[in-house]
Image 1 (spheres, helix red, strand yellow):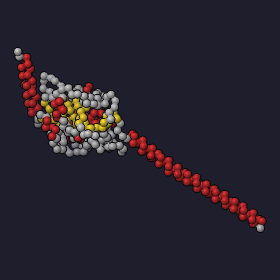
Image 2 (image 1 turned 180 degrees about the horizontal axis):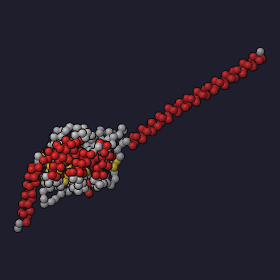
Image 3 (image 1 turned 45 degrees about the vertical axis):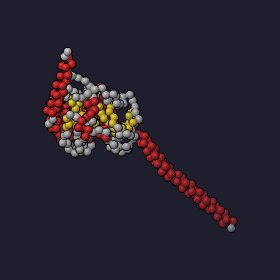
Image 4 (image 1 turned 180 degrees about the vertical axis):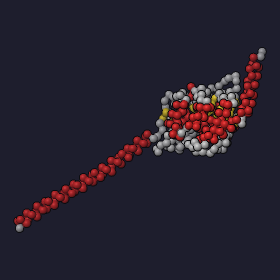
Amino acid sequence: MLCKGKYQTELAAVRYCLHTMNKLKREFKLKQTVKQIVKPAMLILLSVALASCAFSPSDHAGGDAPRSAAIVPLKAQKPLLGLVLGAGGARGFAHVGVIKALEAAGIEADVVVGTSSGALVASFYAGGMRARALESMALQLEDNDIFDFTPFGPGRVEGARLQKFVNHNVNGRMIEALGKPFAAVATEQSSGRMAVFNRGNTGLAVRASASVPTYFWPVVINGQSYVDGALASRVPAFLARQMGADVVVAVDISRSPAQDADAADVVIRPQTARSRINDFQHRQANIAAGEAAARAVVEQIRARLAAVADSKAKGVIASIRP
């Protein structure tokens, strides 16, 4: 009996030890499992927190931030021509054709205004780029030259790449340092009011002007968010007049005629191919459409310029008579 009792006691001790070891093993496994779950979860939460910071618009508040300065009209004895290039996404290739036809006819703008894709072409033209260079750039353009797609943020495209592309092609010059007076039209996101950028960072101004809501991120400048200028004015012909143009030529590439274009002396409406904002498939057709539409009104533009020249000449003669 003593032996049996002793055996039972030792057996119980062994069983207790095994039970305790299994319990500890289960607790260890549970802790490891918790670590395996919690650690990735923490990493995901951290990533989301970082993404919310990294994938939201930065406030551009530097000294070169685009701004609206008082418009001082250009003055000259010769007739001054204003060219206004309107909004229209990829149909904006037509603007290149318009400039090509005007240049071939010996007609050159003195002041340039642009909205959205029109601001993109207008900035290059104001910066001194000739028609041949514009056409070459247009035909070689790839969507990743100007579109930086992102899965995060308030739009599909951030817009920094477009800004860089513009600044590279104007040699980093500010708006006020371009060869011709230039203004890019954007829209205040909060109020819907029109903003006219005629000073500061050229690429950033164009980026703001072209920031189509939900497609591009809005551009924040000095605490104010800006989006596509077309929401305020698709073809701001009146602005070229304010800048000193005696004759205003507006290019309207809207799907339906833009009423603000009617403030121009001559309105060019190319028959462009319908396309998405980042669809460059019809670029050649749209360039050709712009060229054809501009050629059709060359004589009309010349007649307006001649009338202004005659009027200015008479004014000069009248002013010097005793």
